[in-house]
Image (spheres, rainbow, N blue to C red):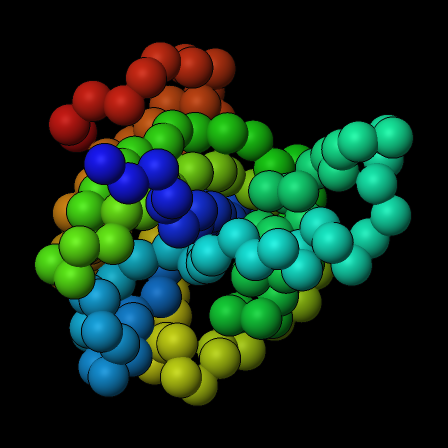
Length: 159
């Protein structure tokens, strides 16, 4: 039984009531040419390159990773990071992943796509998002983000 998982964190970026979605590069191993939200893997350098916040621990590690990933993938600064949900999967290659889905407000910048990651982007409402070939579960997460913006803090359900 494996105990090691890759840890991925994603951001539903909110700007002017719309959500940023990006189309993955067709050469991506996982989910090529599908639409998703920005994010990426936790790397040990996301904390080991910084001084510990207490004698034993680094804090705000996932937030730091998410800010780095969003900046790398789409060139945006984000703020007000808030947990939405989590999911687990085992990929076709046998690698287990834990994904932490968050939402965050756009703080600044114009979208600049990282060429090897994504080929298109758009800002959509929840209703507009239904027209895109989203990775399974993303539409449900956008529904949760919509509800959270209106004060509903429930757990994930199929939208």
